[in-house]
Image (tube, rainbow, N blue to C red; front, side, top):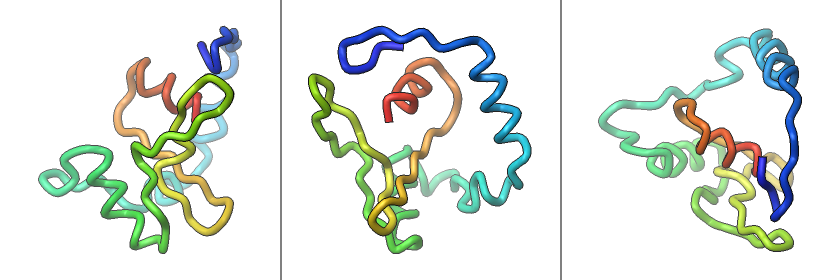
Length: 101
């Protein structure tokens, strides 16, 4: 993974460990607000709809600079330190972006 201009190696066991831990979560905790076809045309539409229901701030697409990289701190900020990251689907580009967050 490339982050802040440096390459990092992620062990193969990392994904298995994350999947194992997440599989124990009730689905309602992982996504209590399902994506609505026709309403949520993209991730930003979903985040814009979801943020007010959580009394949060939609920061989707808002970039901050961390050293040399511009990154999205989170998709929705709730309170002072509750960072919500939203990713729909699975592909390398989205996974890489999520890991940077």
